[in-house]
Length: 379
Image 1 (cartoon, rainbow, N blue to C red):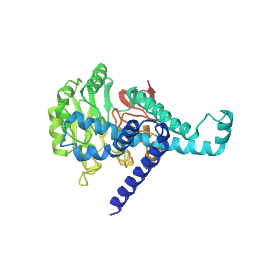
Image 2: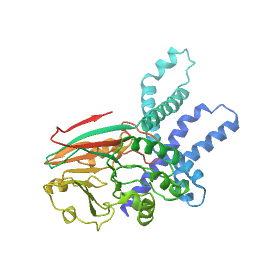
Image 3: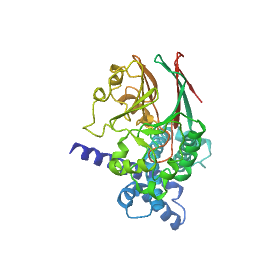
Image 4: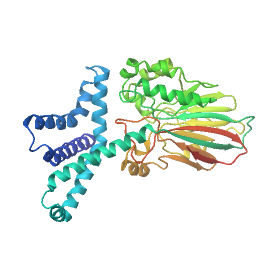
């Protein structure tokens, strides 16, 4: 009941914020011909209902049409935050200095139109910066130390949160696979949420064919994320098998000097405890894949060597980064607890609109060396 009330409250707040912004931007078309005003009204209405239309129609219309609703709707869910803040700031500025602006312009400056332009141009600028930042993928290079026997360095590409689906299609995934293969890795690891919320666009774009092109010496491994459950876990597992990705679902596999421990996602209330999956081994390098970075102390207590996680996106856009920083002990980046080293990735892909504001899209290239200093470099 509380969850439903919270959802209703969010929807009401979203609806009222849209009405407020529509009213504040209306002066730009107030004195235009009626057809322009109609177009404006339709555009505002489309922004408001596009997220609802996506969920209502996603199984009834084509994948390309659904993708438009998804990108517009989820993108606006992010951008409305900045539009609303710009409106509030401009309200304050006009209340304090509005008369000065009007006097300085000799009466030519119409304050409602000035506020409307601040909202529209400011939002467009933020959207442009966020979009460019999303496409500018960061390569996080980790040099990790182990005291365990290791004949030669092990190079891994570690990725999380691709969210393949309506927002990310074939052309973008092809670029990602190209720079994964450029690393010539010993093993490629996915820390969950390869899939977004539906298998329909993945099968439509035949993304399993592209994923099979990933190259590494010892194969491609993954753990499940919460979005694999949202999309239907059994269908997700079938798709990942077709993509030649080995999913470790509360399973352990040995690869040369490595032992990979893939945990089922926290979405499964019956997943095994970490201590039931593996026991510390003095001569084997143990790596945990666990999508959601909760209870980091569990891996440290087991004296495991490394853990890779994702899930947080570090909020994806500010100010949600403040929320993830509060909710998670480590919402992004490298940390060491005891002898266990952790890295929580902000993700390569994205949920919803293609905007990264105050956060980064990234993939990790981690090299394990014997007897070297821990350090991190970011390119």
